[in-house]
Length: 634
Image (spheres, rainbow, N blue to C red):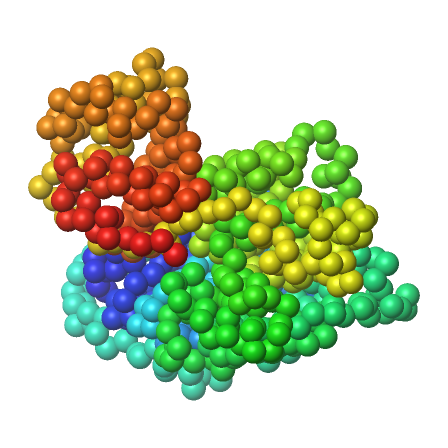
């Protein structure tokens, strides 16, 4: 059995992802066995049984919440609960995702697990189905990544793995492989080196009639998978807006929204479900790019890429539509185009969806005297905390990563009502539905809020808009009516820059920048009143020798780079908040890149902040400084 050293780079902070060449038959087989050990170890610990068959089982389950988490108000629960541990498996449209899913399904089932193969679904639909069973699920997807990239996400007891859990899974896989090789050597059986393992496309075809069956090894029909999901979403809106129900005998019969919407599926996993889902709720639905195609002929299935939504924007304008929605490759990212054809800035979309969560929160949240918390990631704009505070929420800054946010939602006594990040992941934690970043669900929540809650607010204010400006009230407020009331924001996109080679240096570029900023902050504002506590605890006094060359900086120069009052945050890279904007530089958790973003109240403010980052980075990497200088605003 191979050592799988080449696959180590696939095990990243949020999932397993990388070039398709590394997803060999041997690796998929070994990974399936590692999942078996993980799920059996989890269930053994949950039921108080001894664990003896996993090399690092105790470590693997150490950080997993083993509490049950089923949807209490969903009518989609199965009629029976199988005795065996059940694992839900789904896959996206990418070439080889289906054969990988089938190989994993066969492996898990042959080692005693019950497998339900949903087939081609979105990642949030996989998460929904795991809640109906044991909370265990595997999704074969590389999300929004380019074609030629494959990946796997998974849940254990309804919880996403941490970065440490992912590395422990790799350690278990390699340790088990090493143990198998040692056993082969002891038996003088070195002839089978794993090169003769079957191709993925044949992994699930067996001529053995006695082999136990997998529940739909080729995937369940779309309507069977989608129907309980759609019904559960319908129940949400009946709960929030019971007066819109048309029939007491059939509570899921209700008024359709008087909206014309356009949806761009980007040839991804939402292609087969978006139309039946949204026509259930909206009167007029126009779909583009809804043929599942792993070659992604129109470009990467990433709605946040610059100019990626041009076709959606044009379609909205031509059809005089109310709104356009775009979903990424596996359906967990959402971007919005307003009725004028303008892309809503992700910061503003996060604010709008937080408004939805706060205004529609159920009675237990309303009765709580503690203000609900809204989680947002470090790449979001400097305006967002103020806007969230105006809604009565407590803004909480977080590391980037939707899986990290989901983990925070599961903390006992969490007051987080809503979480979102710049990349388009949005999570409602209000108890109505699965607490997962589901792009289609988030889009429907926004549509209903526009028609009912926002419209009601307009009427009650005597033709005065939500933010004080007179607007038409004959129909639901348009997004342009709302977003134009928000503070002006000029920003760059979330750019990806090649990660500099720091092999010859003591520490990575991000740490160098953090140490330098901490040194400047110490000069400007002793005794560190404005220094983030996490930074002070992490760095103490400057210990990086790479910074020694710039420690001759004068007080005047320090004040020029970091004026008094600048807030430095280093929970995830380096973020600097100035009086009229912010900038952030951090290392990506999904690729070998740095991500950078700058924003200001005006173009001049943005350029000023951008210039400061150029000056801060130049002593350490002149090429990086030049790349930052070349970035332009959206």
